[in-house]
Image 1 (cartoon, rainbow over the protein chains, first blue to last red):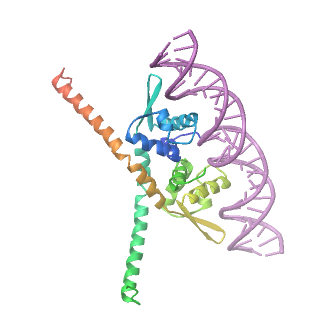
Image 2: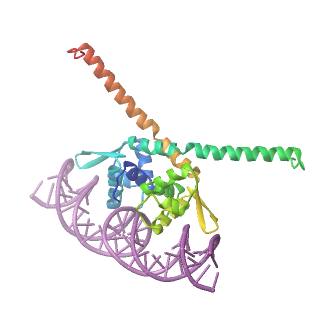
Image 3: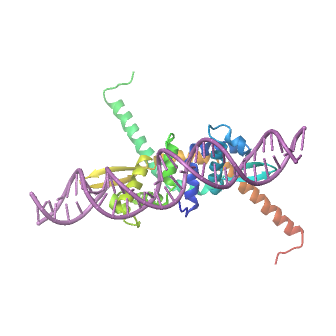
Length: 118
Length: 118
DNA sequence: CGATTGTTCAACCATACGGTTAAATAAGCG
DNA sequence: CGCTTATTTAACCGTATGGTTGAACAATCG
């Protein structure tokens, strides 16, 4: 990937369930690489790669303490992602409105119509 | 990708700038495949693939009208993505608070200290 | 020092991605 | 019917992804 926009790397990082779960762990507290890897049935090397993807997206930063690498969450880059999505909020609200209208019309029809209420 | 969670496909769809731009076009109005492809320097086949990724994520739905395929936005699946991210909102707010505190402390130091104000 | 622990690096593998071109399909037009 | 237009499919290419294993590198411990 050429990764022009930071959104590219953020959304790409979030597109993997293992990485999302790692972020969820980090929301609780910082963890070492080993601790982050433990819940998953993957090798340490694989976990290391996932963490590197999260780092590249700026979602995780690492502080090397002795021989352990402590990873901590930096949610800031998610903000841009949320802002991007937020521009589309009106569309699903609109859709909910339509649904609401449909339900209302349905209820009205039920009330007026054959009276299927118990 | 095995694509277990809908979040996987949504975030994956959003991770590509071409696809995000397509969604932005569709926010304006529905467009045919050809119209969606035109702004980009890619083949129609490539555009078709992008649109299929968006469809798989449920972000675009297609109505075949004669020989043209009209694509329209369905932003609903973004909602889940935004909700997921929203759980981390407190972290960047917290970070902003820290920044705010730092700025405040700095300003106080400036006021008390060497008086660098003009 | 040597052994152990935590992590990365390197090589490799299978599959997916994003792109191409060329051919196939589908629908409107003369 | 044939020609054109709109789109997909198929085959392919180079690179990236997610995974493995085994070796290498650091740092701590005895």
